[in-house]
Length: 444
Image 1: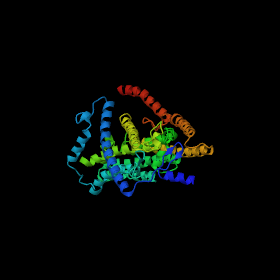
Image 2: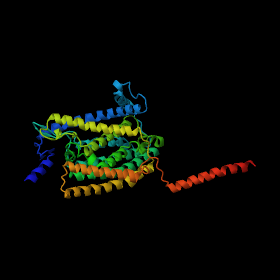
Image 3: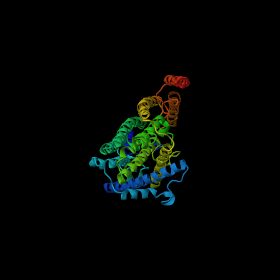
Image 4: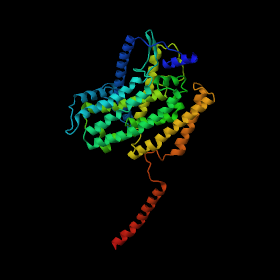
């Protein structure tokens, strides 16, 4: 009976307490559930769109700070309404269509890119459940028991918008950008999916609510500590999936004019622009959920024990968005700091380094989990978290110090080995010695 009660509590999305799992009150009735869902949809969409607008403003201000200039500062206080002015301008501009474009797909592509990023948010829990007088209300639009599988299915559709935009434009530069993007996103999508498997092994479930509750506590069980290499692979893959520097090859301005959206104008161009930042926010939300405890507040268990009041929901909601904004800042910081990879380096990093490392790490986490279970160390104990953290530190040192040594990941890396490079240097020196002799013979 006790095991059945624990299973029932886990299925109901119960949170961890000092004495184990507790069963939350049942969900609200049909009418209350429908009204709560409508309210959550409006709040989520509003915050999401306003957040995208503010992230665009933040990137322009932060890059201006990095480059020692002012950035947008005339429309609204500190330029906060500059994105609104740009949006109004693009809405008012006349749409242009290439003469040879395939219009049905040309019009559909921007909407596909934006919609897929927005749909992923349906299963992300952005706050602690609220025990209202009408029942327990989950802080997710659709708390599916297969939330992780839903994310993989929906996120993989985003590449279609980019590919269709490049193909339907009937422009060689746009087509090349679309092909680059499809190869890049498919390559790193595999590494990103493999990086999440260690998280699923530790959680024992594919529900995002269960993954968050597995990390609940004082922050020791956050997957960024127990699955550090998986977090790093997911983090790097997120840059490639969102086409951000140093993986912005699909829209490299210096090579492809603008990439897959070269033929777009007005609001359709803005849709791709918004979709990029929407994907950045979605990737940051997934990283926060899978590796930083989601809405869990570190160094305390106040948010994990009853009663689950509305105040706890608001505080956990604020902490969740603080984690998202931290990762957004890192995305912006990296864009205006690192140079772009070459395309062969990008593909080599994904297939020769990221994917084998992710596969080996899945085996390592599975072996560690079985070993600690055989040793009788419970996954919720602090000893379990400390042992996993120590093992990850050792793996990280071996991976970044002894295996890489700056030769594979560095953008300055050349495919020439030292012997061939030395031959070229000797040949160049021989030519330099022979040049004066030839010049003297020519003078005679």
